[in-house]
Length: 181
Image 1 (cartoon, one colour):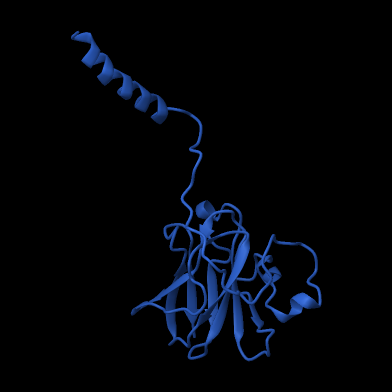
Image 2 (cartoon, rainbow, N blue to C red; image 1 turned 135 degrees about the vertical axis):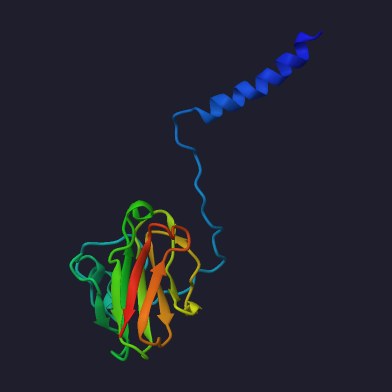
């Protein structure tokens, strides 16, 4: 009779140790709950394409601007009328370990602009901006989302200075510097 309680104690411990030491990766990852209705991003969503943009795609900022790694500040005139600037930030596949592309951006002081975020990674990411006086309130759907997909964030006019942009889910790796002059 004394062996039964000891056996009942050893059995759950053995199962827990076996589960913790298994070499297989867990069959789950953290992902946010899907939103009821996705917000319009102003750009076509879906899998990234290497094809040239079509005439229909020219009404939105092109995510192709982020492909060239040499452009530290991928700036382009906004296609909706050329009144604003659009900066493109990409989360390439594996971004949780490698970070954003590019990691530096520049914007004009006291002028509103748009950050076009191209999440090519099948992991949840987003972009948030923080300045000397705290978080910057961005317009648009700022919730993190699983890629591939895009979001446009409207950034209010900022004073000259250095700002940080980062992913709320991976702030230690996915970070960059926004210089406003």
